[in-house]
Length: 115
Length: 183
Length: 165
Image (cartoon, rainbow over all chains, first blue to last red; front, side, top):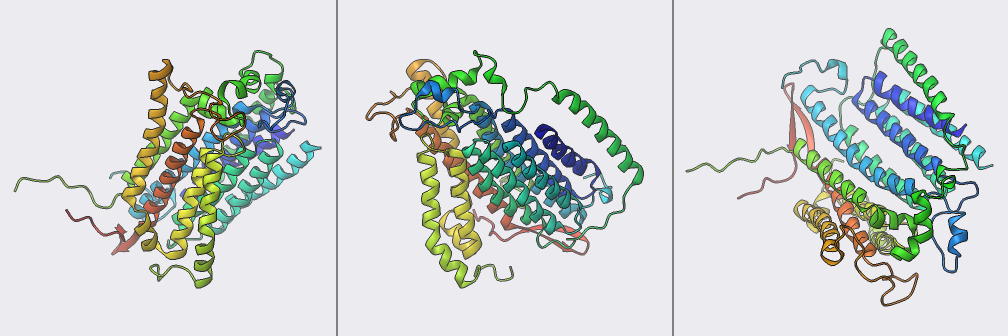
């Protein structure tokens, strides 16, 4: 059930990317898609009544390994969030350059393809 | 119980993203995306991932600042667009087909609450959890995975961040670098 | 944003003057204790960048660029990536495996202590420097460039002075 809601969030981002005509809205649609993908990966690794994968002093390791959630998708998502910020900055610079050349954010008015 | 809470938070995220995409004012759209990110941070905290919750909360602030730089002091802050009716119908049909396929695919995933690494004793996650403290000495297993077991991923991440900054610097350069000519 | 040289109002400046040290300290804590508690190089680096961005927004661009300029940020960015690569390559020299944890574990102290986990704190510090410097550099790049229109033609201008050589 939760997986479906997460996928609906992804589809809303896809709608924003394909239907919207404003460059900023397209960037926001991509950003929403990234939220949903990160959330989906974390949801896949959750264990019922799980605890965070961080040991405390005096924990029994075997018992800890039977209760903790999956650390592998967490590590991957941690890098992916920071990469997303760098990519967002790159997209914003491209949008500013497009605005400088055409004077608008509307992609239907950018008809001159020559440099 | 936790499924219901996460479902409610995800519903709020969906409402927020629809508002963000459909509002006319660009500044309101950017501000409307910030609660979506904060709700996802709360969900990360509920799912037992405090590292990612901290990162998400801090990144959210920076992304707001970067996105506001893109729109502030521009002439057009509101948008009026007429809809292309045929294109809209095509997009919704495509999204519907995509949703049907996804429903078929999501049925074969392990159910929420029993992830795949618990079914297989030889999964790498089990090894990380059991031997992580002994082999790397780090009590935070996530940190031992990103910096010791899977350091190549982090190296690739550093490269991507470096390249994206280089690209942004090259795109927004004002003065071209002139070659020194012979006098 | 008409008088950018002067920054924001007095209240914002005073609160920033008090809080900037504590925010930076929090980032350093997250980075250094990343292997024992939630945190690590990535969130700590973003907190570093947020501190400098707060100073830039509160005191104006010139004040912040006097403290840490574009060149210094670029150098720190490269330094962090290079440190990470050097630590990874030293693994080949000591044990023959790329990215191996060559420092002896639990060496000076026991479990759950600051220096208990070999190269992981050093990697955390280098990643923190790299992420913080590069994110601050993105903000500098975006803030010094303006778009103006002169008789129908767009033009990028910068408020930074051209380097004289």
